Amino acid sequence: MQDTAIALPSAPPASLWAARWRAFRSHALGRVGLALLLLLAALAAGADLLAPHDPNEIFYEHVLAPPSAQFWFGTDELGRDILSRVLFGTRVSLQVVAAAVLASLAVGSAIGLVSGYAGGCSAPTC
Image 1: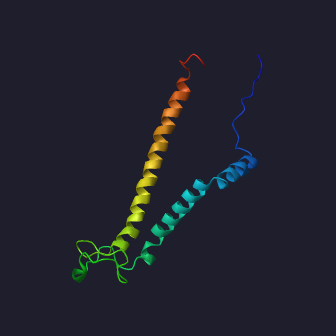
Image 2: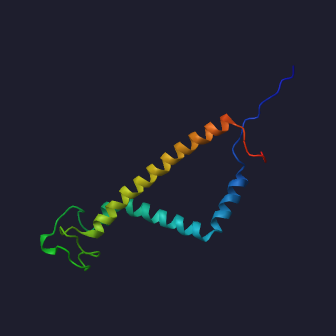
Image 3: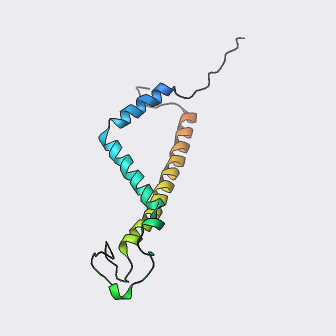
């Protein structure tokens, strides 16, 4: 009987990561998407410092006020500052996106593992 060593997959070489990074940098839409994601993350992280008002504070004298120097995006029907609400809402939006990505990663990985374990292909070209 012959001893056969099973080769375990190793991490890709550093040159592969460098090639992927170069390809990403040359893709204009990828750079725009990354910049927008970083901007949203910075706005969400700094919402406490950037928001001019508490998002739940009510200004009764400024109900449905148009944009002004005090309220850059105006106010809503209850007199709350819309800019502050948008900045704090960015946090929730990014959390929902992260949860959706993680859920799809888990489901997709499970489907891939089952498909790989079951093996086989019914197509004539396999």
